[in-house]
Amino acid sequence: MNAARALPLMLTAAVVLLAAPPLRADDAKTEVVTDLANPFGVVRGASTLLDSMRAEEDAEGLEAGGSMPATMSILLLLTILSVAPALLVLCTSFTRIVVVLALLRQAIGTQSLPPGQVLTGLALFMTLMIMGPTFKQINDTAITPLQDGTINEIQAWNAAKQPLRAFMFRQIDYADNWSNVHMILDYRGIHKAPEELRYGDVDMLTLIPAYVLSELKVAFLIGFRIYLPFLIIDMVVAGVLISMGMLMLPPVLISLPFKLLMFVLVDGWHLVAGNLLASFSVPGAG
Image (cartoon, rainbow, N blue to C red):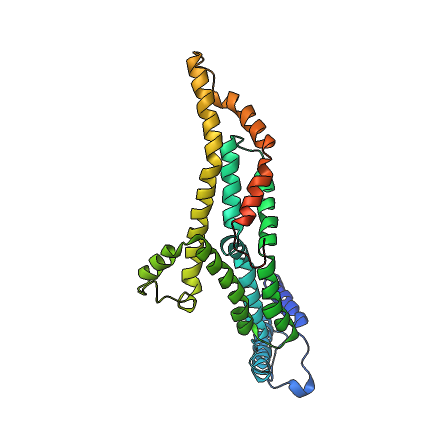
């Protein structure tokens, strides 16, 4: 093997060896025999050394009281970070708020005003306000004990999902949308009468889609109520234009200023935001 081909392997092996922490004399349980003149031998020796270190870390983690090894903890953290946006959208009040705001913008007739970033930001901060008690409970029962080392990762997940489940069940009860829960349970082959169903019988795999369907139903009902006054203005303007024979003039062009004027006069943003906040069942709110 010539020098040009051996150089990348030598650099890779050097990086691996430098990145690995040194072994102490009393911890050297795996003897690594490496021929430094052979790059493949260097890589093989580094691989053996790292495998030995991982095995020792796993053994130490199991002896420390059942906590997860460092590799599994990092994998679990990366998994949580990857699904965190989906959890924020699907398991909180964000879905209902952002759908209602989007329907409001469409009802007014301004296709790009307010911008999508503004509506998303408003929905995000309203979500933080509504979910504040739930997030505080998750922090007190799961995150803080995990950081203190009193519980492991699995126990932290079981403790963290209980406040979130309670919030979702509360919204389903408040909107009386248990039919979605029964539909998904029936699809999964779990048949239970409504009077026999308990919160503990509904797992997260069933609860999350049922909650999202419930939120979409409530959001569309609120959007329908928002649409009605703007629809009346559009119909009145269209009727006036037709009676005047101005068929070539788009009704939307004339009705948009009237809709904006009405929305401002009644303080529409205050009404929409206030009713959205009041549409959620939050302990201690109101």
